[in-house]
Image 1: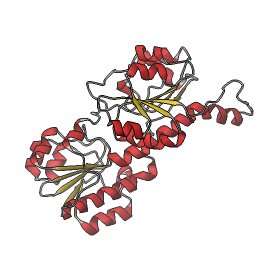
Image 2: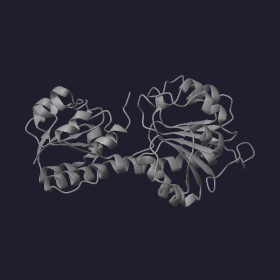
Image 3: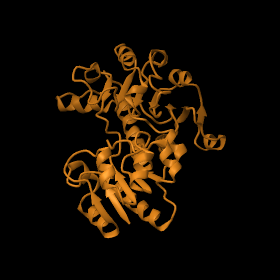
Image 4: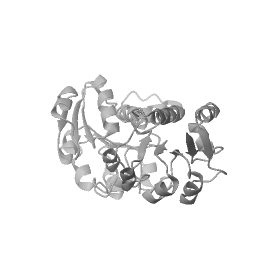
Length: 335
């Protein structure tokens, strides 16, 4: 089987996914073609190097793969080391019989773990206490009282792979979960995991913790703004690990300046976050540089799982990382 790795082999980013032992594994099982040099892949590169290959392994920033590109190269499998394929694979590619896999499920588990960390960080105000002690203080919750996660009501906006993983992890904290999504789970699922479906405004008005997990597309762009932030109760925690443009950022900043609630933000309308953004300096904001997941140590595991799924494709077996056309249509479209 001939496989094209459309990530520069010697680039530092590529090495975080494919350390030497995984490059060796690729070469043990496949006839490999590598993107030369140290630059990002282009459409022209795809047409040149993927021609005659059975599968292509893509990374972040790869150009959209169209049905014309598939026709010109005869690629049968697209294997994406990232999560969403919403901005990678044109919908009509699926109609040609091409299979698509990605690290989405593994990304989701790691992001969900990150959200738990953000909930605990925000509720317990961990950055404040770490900095206080480092600066010689010993604040015994007099100026920044801590709060817990156990037994709280958590509102989740969006129901995808990350949310599913997060709901399972939250069971250990005995929380009540309110869920808003255009794509809802079954009644059996809701009963099993103590989930109640609700409107988005009910979630913002009734939950002490609100976490955003919607895919980014034209329907969800700017979905959350002043109306929702005004509903948050005093002392609430707002978390966004989805995409910055789901939020009307200026309206969020105005609400945060009132200092009624806290926020842990992992994503922004513009990344890196502007140096002069108030989100860098507001005391009630914990800004993170888009690192909710996957954690760095998960990258080789994701690449290894991708390799194993390519082998399953070669053997005609079911691939647990496969992304259907329907699932891809609900994924984030970056932009």
